[in-house]
Figure: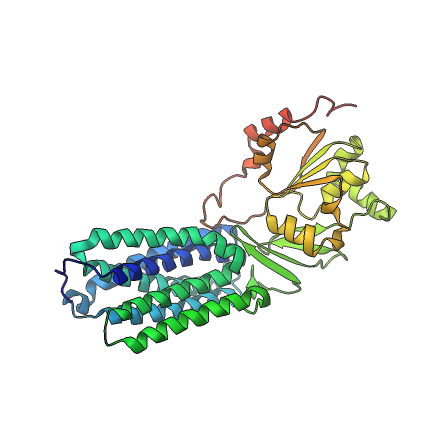
Length: 417
């Protein structure tokens, strides 16, 4: 190829953009997968894997003899991208189908090392492809690099809606579909690669159809998490900051909501008119029930309402104005107000309960309202954000500034009646 060509084909620019879009989408979706399958701090591993793979890919491209002699064709990059689409699927199945224990042992270290190397391979291929493309369009590198950045930005923007709509595994497979589309564009730059174009596009279409079919069937989903097989789930849903699942609790007759297979909350069947006396006593005798025993009938604000135990405590002690703040829309809307509303006796649908789906501290700061009682009970979910940011930082619900805001929103009669 001749890198002295004054103009760059637009399809080449779009191919670079699709490749970087797929790369960023894969990297960020892996942070969500790692948080669910392992623990929240493993979100940083996904970022490390991406940087390692892209760096090695650039080095490999530099030392490739064909690259030095400019002897490769655009169709070769198409083959790399198309095969990379299949490699992304292999990565997904390695992560979700292996029981990765977090104990200190040589076997576990080898397993984590295997996962690290396998996950780095798609990034290595992507790094090599982008490096070769830029190296052979050096006269117009600003234009190519512009499309490189546009693709990466689109990958970041698509992450949240894709995780909400397609789930973690589906988003990873969609990253593979974008790699296949990029392969089709690379092949289209070679007039003798018409058959390869059709193969790449067909592969992308098949992967997209698999993802759409997986939305409701969940035939591709996490099989092992936190070192144990996933069992007993009746419902599961992903969003950009959690994987929420619901199933029967092992130690009671309630349903249990789990966030990233770790933090959990029980769905309380709360009907004040028919609740058994022993269940009412159990709710109020535990530690979180103390405020409602001291201040019955309080106007209550519950931060991190979850499955509704604190909301139920307020309700059975006579509260007629309860605000339940829950940051996770899947728990608040899909679970408590829709699919499992009957399991809680319609707790979140009662006229005494107002539900706000947002961050607790932001809600307190936003509203101009006072409460007799503000409660937070074990609201930590140990789930990282999709970017891995703040995965090891403190929960800002517990800072000095936040407690000042809580106190300022207590009514004058909060401490006595």
